[in-house]
Image (cartoon, rainbow, N blue to C red; front, side, top):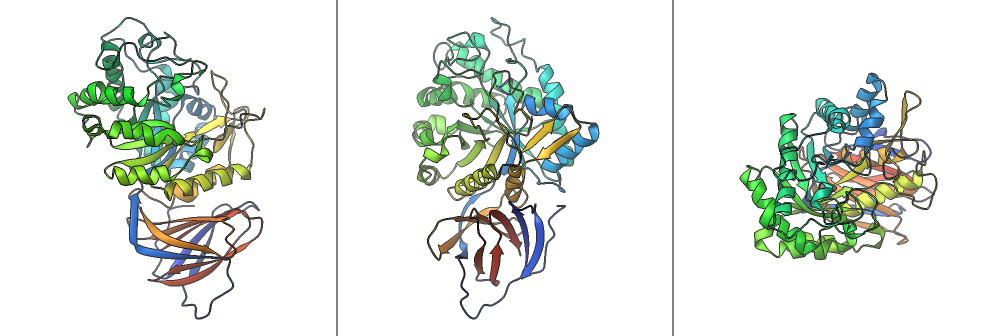
Length: 476
């Protein structure tokens, strides 16, 4: 695509992606003053004065599996793939999640201190996977980006010997209680990760305390995990992790601490337990959540949480297509996945999410590798037997947001009226830091829809939305 140009006032840039083959098709239109009412399907009216949350960023995760797959490409294609994601001629991801140690998407289960009994953590060390599969591509991404990428770490769990079940997986809590030695050691473990990556010239913007702490209570869970209920996470934060971060100079202005990092339906009550304790809340910058149960969630919980605690942000921190009941986890060219991503991102943004972070940047054609056998889909699929990769429809779904909604863009109010009240078209509207207005519209219908866009400052536009398409509009 190249960098987005700044057009004169009244000129609208439109970029379309559609099932019938368009990928960011560029066009330009002029605002007009419409005298008569056209027979349109949807009317969207912009309100510039009513403003909501700011954007933090969009991105994906530098998992071991992503790096392992990327490494199998030629150097030329490695560069091209990272530029596709992070470059100004790509979709300009502005955030990256970094696993703290291993995950299910690693070639093996591991942590940074697997030898038991070393209570000073003097044996803490980054592993081969960091130097082979994470750090080179994190640095490559930053090299190609024209903006600062916000990197945040997430621990899937501590070393097995710190857990009650002495197992890296299958549930299990930290031994003892908050303020005890194992909770303090896990706090030190997280801080040591931040410091170790700093030594590699990678600045960590934030952390989530632990990945999926509620899922970690399941003894059948097959990969790296740690169980923390809301009271344990609250007490761990206020008694151990928060003080340890502060002792090492990582106050709120240097590290954004995100609580929860699990499924949306239970986010509100979990977060309230922590935020209602002022000694824990003082360490919190945001609340992170995953998308896997969003179809069963009440997104009004997001609204309530944002309004109740206005000093924190909400961030969608992990998503991917699972297809648990399908023997084929990767569906090349899936438009259903495109709609799933696009609809979910719009819904989250319209309910105060400050961004949306995908899971693995790149997987192989089987959806792995995963030592735990947990195969899934990704926006880029790499054919490791040939020097090639495929940009999935979900890659373009991500790009319609990441390319246009630059960090610090502010969501604006709008009214959407459908002629037949079919609720088949979704939209969101933002003002960028350069004062450009971005409107993103998704049409999931199998037929075209005529949309009237109205900006009281500029005029109106009647636009023909292609069937099963999404369009990003930008004007100044």
